[in-house]
Amino acid sequence: MTDLNKQMVEQYRNSFLKEVEANVEEGEWVKMCMQCGVCSGSCPLGPYWDHPPQELFMMIRAGKREEVLASSSMWMCTSCYNCIARCPRELPITHIMHGLAHYAKRLGLAPKNQPTMKFSQKFWDNLMVTGRVNELKLGLSLYFMNGLVEGIKTSLKMKNIGLGMLLTKRMNPMEMLGGHSVKDKSGFKAMIKKAQELEAARIAKFKTP
Amino acid sequence: MTDVVATNETILVVGGGVSGMTAALEAAEAGKQVILVEKRAYVGGRVTQLYKYFPKLCFPTCGLEINQRRVKGNPNVTVLTMAEVSKLEGNAGNYSATIKISPRFVNSNCTACGDCERAVSAEYPDDYNYGMNKHKGAYRPYRMAYPERFVIDPRMIGTPDADKAKAACKYGAVDLNMKEEVLTLKVGAVIFATGWTPYDAAKIQPYGYDRFPNVISSVEFERMKDISGPTGGKVLRPSDGKEAKDIAFIQCAGSRDRNYLKHCSRICCMASLKQTTYVSEIEGGNSTIYYIDIRAIDRFEDFYQKVQADPKVKFIKSKPANITQDKDGNPIVNGVNTEGYHRYATAHDLVVLAVGMEPSIKGAMPEGVKITVNEHGFIENDGSNGGIFAAGCASDALDVNRAVQSATASALKAIQVINRVAGMEG
Image (cartoon, rainbow over all chains, first blue to last red; front, side, top):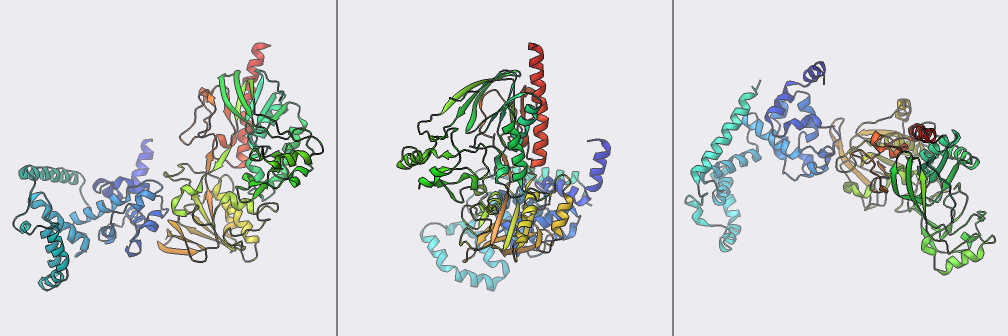
């Protein structure tokens, strides 16, 4: 490409598309979408999305920054991979959806009280303690997510399942006391810290407008 | 035994469709010796299976007849039908081609009277109509077939029906002892005009071509319109035989898709636009075209505009996600419309998949010389191919008009090789 060509390409690539390409996982694929609609039609949860993937891609290219990042759509993705399997251009749509959701959350623009986001945060916090997911604590924290009364109600409703899991040794009550851990907990913490530094450096490289 | 004279000043044309016939005739009419090898029992290729051409909506039979007469009247062209090139060795100006000729079981005494066909009862799926009906064990491949000779299906050999066919023939034309022949010919240049194959629609799993009877391919739809075709010129639903009125066309069925064919097959948009004119002729007929973008190739934008102005044709900008079926056997097209992002689930009487073009040479290359092809399997016009050239759909996804242009160009290239050989020998 000549310099003039490159210049024109840059001119038409709006700043939000550039921002997505720089910060969102697999974001550089967004410009490859040809708006055929196969992803949106193939999504099993599609009818519940405000904006199906194909529309999100078009909104990104149209520079609708606030609308995209504040949307609850990409939080609806269940990673079924139907869209990736069918996309005629092999866009990693599932990964882009998670990438967008993650980026929106990092910027604090994700919709408040989005249940998938709340669960993801609880999962992360739970995992960070010992390097292993403590399913007992994670389950209980979900039950009590919306207050004490509802937590007790849910616990009673789930009582039989819990007892069954205890009997078949699928749940260990001792996990309440700290729980199992990775062998090298300090190594695990160092690894996460390093990953977060790398990510922070990447964000710093692209100044968010 | 088939008697064929060939020298290294002879041009071998592989494939006797419209491109192969054109290339052979252009070279023959320029005074060169040509051998035209055709896999089917007749020349004309896929053009013989078309109802109408776009954009003029005229019948291909008339152009075919002209070409057949040119072949008949030109002593420079030798036509070998039911023949395939199995091996090709050598280099420009000096090739050796091994040609396998399958037995037709009918010799040149045949007058095409049809007595053998009437005498037999065995029936086999008719490839000419994509298996939508059956032909008799002794048959004329299609009504305008050239050479005008009947064929006996090899599956009938050894059955009492074969003897009935032989007994019925007044001219001694049925020869049940005919064997496969293998010829080795010396030729100077080779033109591959091996054409295209419709993409196997069953591979597009979400569209259910293999599961839903009322989902058909565009080439099958084309056969339905032929008055002497499997449905007598009517568009009938395969499930219940009712006349279809509300017909959907799905573009890019297999094309422009990394899961199937990566390339744009180029002709399918125009073919579907053409086919909507067939639907509009039906009393109460309506078409819906589902598309990513309409690529009216060449100078055909005006044809697209004409179809757009037809109130019986609806355009929906969307590549459907999948097809399901309701209890009455109506295919339901599901997807999201790019213009407004509205979800739809629309039932139609019949869905036509505008299938893509796959080069027939893909996976069927003769042994011997290495021929350079591109990533889609089309033969490249590349210097490394020496005296081997591609014509028509062997070189790219082309419509008839462009295929014929490509064939003329390849004939000129082959003539140049032959002239060089002749010059050196002269």
